[in-house]
Image (cartoon, rainbow, N blue to C red):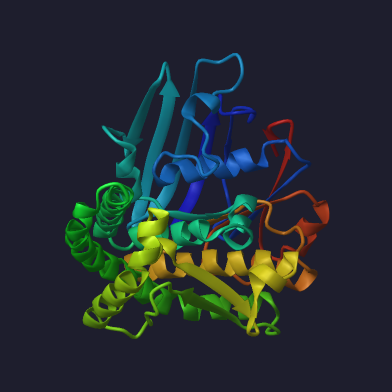
Length: 365
């Protein structure tokens, strides 16, 4: 998958322009607040119409304008294709190959990308809910039904927690808890099986990429931390048995607290470099390298699934990385088209083969 042309009109602070990227690495550099991230975001919107920064469409319209429009030509599915996104007067329009579509979701059928932004460092630094969200979102790209499993599980958890609170006032309701437990165990085991299977696929490419980023000095491993004593080699029957035992053992605590204390909604991931937890002991550069390795591995798994390589978008990725790690990202990810932003002009000197864009006050040169 290759972006061959990107057009933007009235989009954030970017001055109306058309750029033609290189097929391999594209370095976008300039000082802060000049529009580098806006350019990365514009490409990402073609993955499904949503900003990775959480911005609303009306926030993307340039000041003193009433609409924005983005256009992109790209090579995908063995042929040249095009897509356009326009937003104005609270209405979004999507065209794919000149045909208007009713939903942004149609974009996901023709274009895909993987993005890294500084906010993704929260995957290492913050709580387990961020890490659960990471693996669940990655699985959703591979298995459409997984999203409905997550939704169903959350509904059951909410209902079980409400019942636990009611039981403290109405002990006669205690016998009805088993009904929710049966459903929770079945759906929970399905979720855990999907997570374990995805981690088995993710672990090897993550290790390979991190080995390359660290100049073969570090080994990355990913550990699933279960609250129910399950193991990645457990089959579905074993998972359900262990989940039931865990729910039974925690029942007294659940009655006291009024919420479900064990299960996949409480599990976590731990990333380790040379056997040591990155979250607790890793340097800033190691934490950044870990997330990068995960994102590059995510792209690799999408390629294995779709037989087409997604575009890789790396926003402010080079800071806090030493020269060898920067060199890997700029020159060793040859199989993918890469867009990478940076502030330092010196970074572009390291680029051996590709294209350099300079942004100043929204003007892309």
